[in-house]
Length: 248
Image (tube, rainbow, N blue to C red):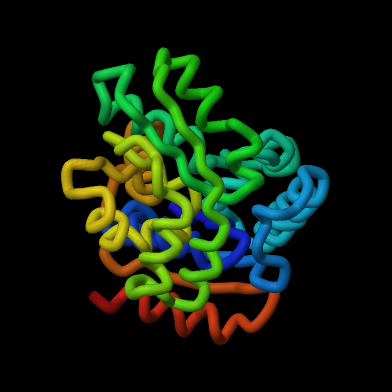
């Protein structure tokens, strides 16, 4: 099984980490559109155009599947990508919704959705969860988190002040959907802020859960081939990949 993973930048590496931990694929091709990150502040037509260009890039490889690790692209351009691709295209939004539904039996649980402005404005998570009878949903755009992760700021006073800026006055959530693949890098800090009892829905874990439910994986791959590509400064992407994927 050979998969392409697409993200607007480096955040999708959190999805790659989950794929590696579950040993689902023999080869992983990662493409980060680092020259044009972030997508979360761009308009829908631009996001769709960039997403289709990513499909064209992946046609250089004989893939079995494409995973869209970017929540913004999953919210706005998944159908267009599927029309352009000759293999299944799986998005993290659908996976995150199903993971939330599986984790929470109480449909009145207070669920907080955090993501980029584009993802939150799309209401993709809210609309899908409402169809599953969830009633207590709150979505908050937290675009500064993307910049903090890109700067590798995972703790400290700047991050704590940003939490206060976004979350002060919000009702305490029973679950937080990390609606951007950058955000799992802030998981420890978010747990410290909200408390251990708050469930964090992680895009990487959600996509693995979805894949294992929908597809048949006949064997495990302990040492898959990894290839990393970026639209700008691929060496920097590879350096970050080595740090995130292999260091504790």
